[in-house]
Image (cartoon, rainbow, N blue to C red; front, side, top):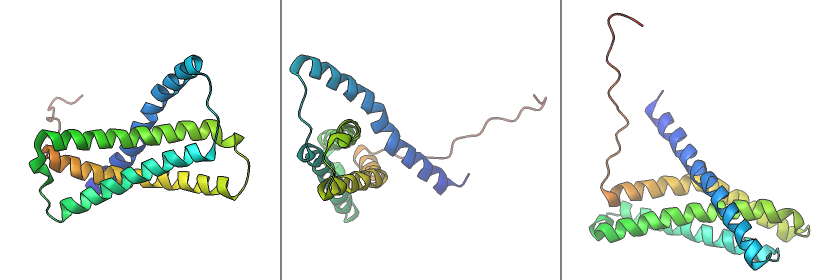
Length: 163
């Protein structure tokens, strides 16, 4: 398999697998919280705020990546910079998982109209933006943490006897 194609598949898989693994945890926390604190009212504004928060984090990642590409030495921040970047990456994935969970639970009960349609388009934008956010986040995280990602692994040694 071509190395670029492999990296693309790995990136897209990671971009969607991480939030998908967070959804059950959020669902359980929401279920427990609802039993203790009662249910929350459904509103377009609440879903819109989650989308806005996610887009703000995507914009922050793109700006940080742009600063890194302009040779800003972000790795000089040391452990604090690495911790902040990992926290931002985790928060972006948790926000997308929260958006997916709340959207699937509440979108059907919203009144139809242009505002609800715009909300759906914004959700699609967030889903499309996720692999791009993951790509720039990985680029920044690799630089901040000083990791070098090598795709080439040594192959298995040949066996002369056969199988």
